[in-house]
Image (cartoon, rainbow, N blue to C red; front, side):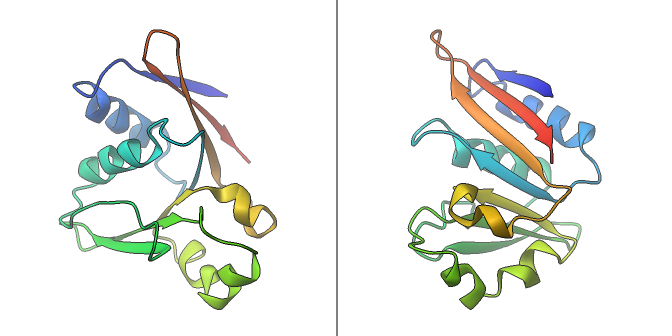
Length: 140
């Protein structure tokens, strides 16, 4: 398991760049952590490093946002917090996104636990007592 630390918002993009350089081939990233721990903020930093040209925000109501990069690539950002049952993920065609070969960054992946593909990264964010964020990464 790898661990990263975000000391402040001033260092988050450097951490995001290091994170992406360590995991060049993984495209499905499942983000775990309590409400308000910084999952969306870290995903925004990852998208910035990936040169996303769209505005990155939480897809709480849309469930998925599609972002485009300057390199003509696509990043999918999911927020499954409002999902009531896994069947809703089937209805939205989750497989088309997660198996597309593009980045899929998933908030609240525990809502679709049995649908997550193997080979994904499980990224857990925790707030430390000093305010820093600890990011633990495990390939599953």
